[in-house]
Length: 258
Image (cartoon, rainbow, N blue to C red; front, side, top):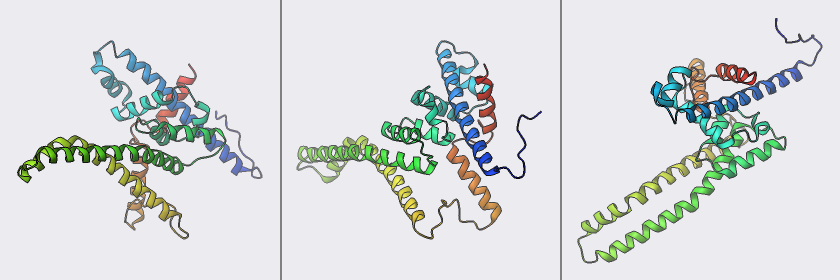
């Protein structure tokens, strides 16, 4: 028998629906954090045994988790553990994964935690913008240092090979600065992606603009729906068959009852 109380016609169903939505969001986050904790314990056990294909073999055969899903959850545990549970209960799984990524600066996590603790209902878009801003602020000084190092090394080689053929100098410079240039390119690509997202946010903020991000150029409703679903799955970081909402909530509730 269901434990839900039927709502009379005259009751405030909107308020009840909002309450239900809040409960569902809290259950999702609680389940994720509990599953992440247990998964970290399992990984620790597999440090001392190699059967079942090790930890990754076990998660695939026993839990049907992808390696990506498992390590997303481990990131959540390592970043948060049991801290800030109440603060994070309202955040979607994709946002928890984003905040838990090793590349996400601590400043971004702290700002989100403080604002949620203060009672602010933050959207995934707002949190992604905070992370982008923090990442950009962290990358810029590192990029300047790398560019300065590459410039200095190139100048030293030009001095060292003075009088040599230009092709010889270019070869020496390319070889010596290749590791630096690779790191510079990686940072520049990340900053370029952040800039694209910033520009898209600014465009959507203009009066009369579509507030939703574009998921494709198709005008076919069926194709547009498919594109939207694909974009949502990409944002969540997992396919529907891989650690879906139903599984997450079911496992979390079972663990909570133990």
